[in-house]
Length: 248
Length: 245
Image (tube, rainbow over all chains, first blue to last red; front, side):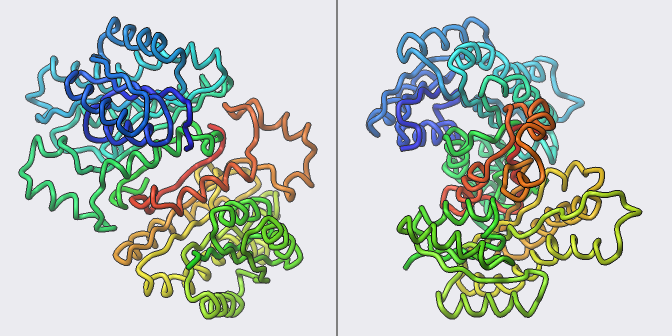
């Protein structure tokens, strides 16, 4: 087990990619905090993680709220006494053309997708600095590179995460903390289903060079690698996992 | 049946570490190198540690030698699951006007043509298998460029684009092709030319993690890209440089 005894916080851990990451961490021996705005789902994911033999704590967290993230940090330290891995996966995905996008929607996307990265990093970095080790892994998107029609706020927020990750990697490298991003292609989760029919979603998921449907577990695999000792010399990177759809 | 990995440059610093990492995972390793003694040394260390390895000599710039090597490995092992093209190097550091045509071709050939020749011979076997992982080696210089290393930077940038094209070409057969781009790495070949102090002076302040890379750092990334966990990754470039770029 590659993460025996480590403490991992996974925001957006209650569904989709975050859920697969949570289970992956649990299987590798980590203690996991499932931080999600959906309290019931977080609790059931934590329960499943416990069934895998891990210690797991579910917390209702809004990553765009300072007090909520503060509480996440306090509860994490209270329960587990440390933090080794922070996975920033919480994000939203709203569809509307730029000309009719409301300022509220714009702000909401940025506050959650990008601001959540900032608030969570700020809350957990001091403890990582003290122990001179830590892993921060942020989930961006291949849309950061390609753009996507009617998802300008999402694309911009995900590209901004990559810039944030690169800057933070330089800031925290001297303390032995690595910071990386993963850019998934469209994965087999609920997210793409919000704006398209089931048939359309599956057709798009299959239309990759590899012809392999990108599953949340494919993303989790790379997150686990970056969280492990094997990746201790990798920082400031944005690795693409997309079945060959985008190469940049 | 044990998986088989063919590693060019397997007698060198990074290649040797990759060979050891693969062998640790019970993969049978064919350590191929221009320097047969170096390949033989890595083979002996792996076998002494309980792993399975063979040593072969190959000049990756010679089509006939590459074909003979791959044909022989394919006949003996029946399969090649992993091809790691690690043979290469910058060879010279000097200004463009000082490069002869022969030197230019030498650098392009050992890095880029060698990768092409190895892939050309191994790909058909992987296509029959309907599986395989090809790992090509670039460099941070292939992205940023480097003064005094014009042909090397060009070759390494070429490898990144070559990898993407081959990834698209081989994807329908379930073959994954990716690039690993090491940053400054402490290999014996590099350490011969520079004292540890000079190296520290040159690099440490530029690298956020405060040290140059070790061959083992790279070996872990190579290995990860051969595992089922990386089954959805193809055509990508993986930098491993302590945050240098």
